[in-house]
Image (cartoon, rainbow, N blue to C red; front, side):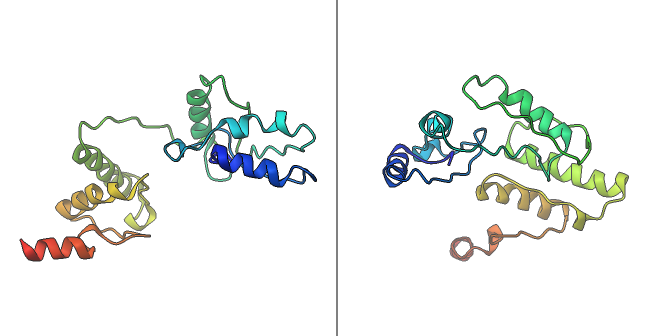
Length: 175
């Protein structure tokens, strides 16, 4: 619901007008589609527009550690236009957060690969125990290139490897 835009909100209001039997699900801290005209005000004003609605806050995180939740809370806390929640987990503290600044994508990806290799070398993990997640598919190319350059085996899930994409094969063949 946090990613609905104004026309969608008006349509929902119209559909629920007579019976007001409406169920929405959303995370008020995760509106990410503003580029698609999503309006976080839709979820922030829900309680005002539907005062009879029962709000069920899902505050337990099953995948994050408390360290991650505390860091997220401290970052989002400066936003005074939000619904306060108390996120918690039974997963324990977890490892400390590492902050690294790369001056370009190659430095960033080299840091990631070095961290993976450190986990393998110093912590006893296997490479198959490690997953590298990224926000957009365009980031996969830099990660792949660093893996190829340093001989780090990898498996790309959910997409084609950059050099296996047909348009890239065609371009390389043309060159």
